Structure formats: structure tokens, C-alpha cells
Length: 325
Image (cartoon, rainbow, N blue to C red; front, side, top):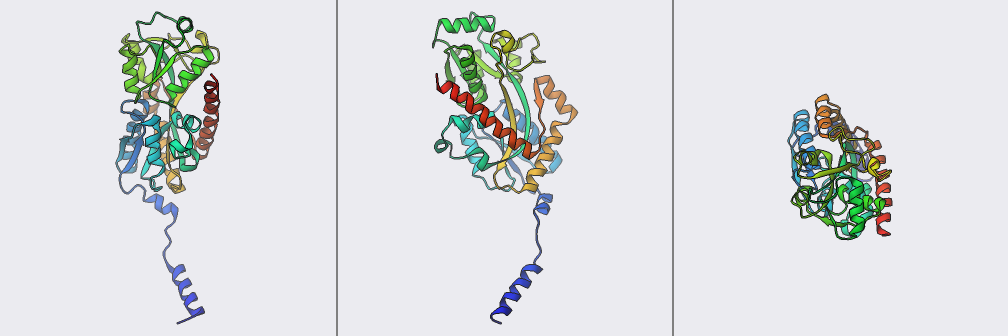
């Protein structure tokens, strides 16, 4: 059989072959364990949220969701690993505004991934206000007193963060520029170590997530000067906002979300989006997070895509501000 007959025979075989659609592929997903990379240390907001989501996703989707902490370089190492993973839905990344800040803070040659090119948005998870705290030995009981102290000793006071580009670092730099002070950034490997640094008195100040730092405020291991939301925190209602306390217009939060490698089939993205949105809307989850000072977020993949792009622009402006100092 030669010529046109061969072509016709091949075409017949092609059209006769069963076709596996993307939607049917998603119906079978997941058929084995899924890895969620957390590019931050254990015990921080991203790690805690990932473990909660992983446990519930395992119940609802029938496969283990395994958390893997891949720390380093302000979240870059874990994000790189997720960006280069096979786009099949079996590797996910728990991200925060660290990644959107890093788009302008860290050159592309150093991070070796472009957030919006190499990763596909799935869904946001929640956001939390931050709290500005100092070690009890610092002679400042209000935010205005701390600002006056810092202005009287430029470059002599330190603030801790969980690393370059993290929300705590960016909130600190924004605070410095808006308050007109010079305090020195001391990056730690993760938020737990940074928290220990200010509790132990090695550093004078830190801006940390309310859910993580509130217990230390209650134990008087640190002194809370202000929170960073538009309104007071329900967890720390007696602490004024930074805007109330003397830095008008100051606002900073930490938010969390889930992404996958670019090219992950859209039906899998949509299936995960539906599952995550169902979790964050559960009354018990809303109640738990409210008690901790976190607010659930729910969006479609397209809405989350726009949210990420807008956040990249927002933090690029902040980076430009402190680059000019």
C-alpha cells in the first residue's frame, strides 16, 4: 500500500483512536500524592496555611498533599523549584507577596524565573495585618516615641525580617520611607528565627504577621506599637493602626496564595481553584482564621492573575522609593 492509500489509512487510524480530553484528565486528578512547596521556614504563616489546606485537600480529593519546605534566598529557591517542575498538577507552590516583591527587587538573572510567565495562578488563600513590635528594653511605648528615638540615633537601631523581599522586609522599608527614619535591616533565614531575634533582644524592632506575633505580645515578650491595616485588628484591638499612631496612610499586609507551574492543564487549575475556594469559605475555617487575625480570600484563577499583576506594580513602586534613599 503506497501513496494516497497510506495517508488515508493513517488518517483513519488517527480518527479511530480514543481521545483523552483535558477535562477527563482532570476527572482522574489527583491519582497520586501532590507536593506543595513552601519556600519559607516551618511555623510561619505560609507553612501553617499550607498544612491546613493540605490536610483538607487530602480529605476532599482523596490523595495526600505533602508539604515540603524549600527555604532560602527570600523564597527564591523554593519558587525556582516549583517553576521548573513538570506542569501536571502534582507540584504546587504556596506563595505570598514575597514573590510579587521579588519581581522588582531581585534581578531576573538571579531568580531565574518570571512569576507571571513561569507560574500559573490557582487561588488566593488569606491575608493578615502585620504588627510593629519592639523588644521591651527599647525606651519607646508608642510609635511616635520609636520614630523620635530612631531619628535621634540614625543607623543605630535594627529591625529583623525573614529575608530580603519578604512582606516583613518590604513593610519595614515602606515604614522607614514614610516615617523618615534610618533603621538597619537584619535579614534572617525565616520568620521564626527573626521573631526569636527580636524576642531575645538581638534586634530592636520587627514587623510581623498578627497571627504569628500576637501570642508573644500577650506574653509581654515584645511591645506592640501599631498594627498595619486600615482598621484595628480584632486580635489586638487596643493597639492603634500605624496611620492612627503617627504615620498617616501607612498600610501593609501579608497575603498567601497557591500557584502551579505554567502549562498545568486548565481543568486541573480550575479543579484546584474550586477546592481551595470551598475550604476558605467553610464557616469553621473562617472562624479559626478570624480568631487568629487572618481574612479569607476567594477569587477565580483569572481574578487572582490580575491581583498578582497589580501587586507586582505596587511593590515595584515601594522598591523604587527605598532605592532612592
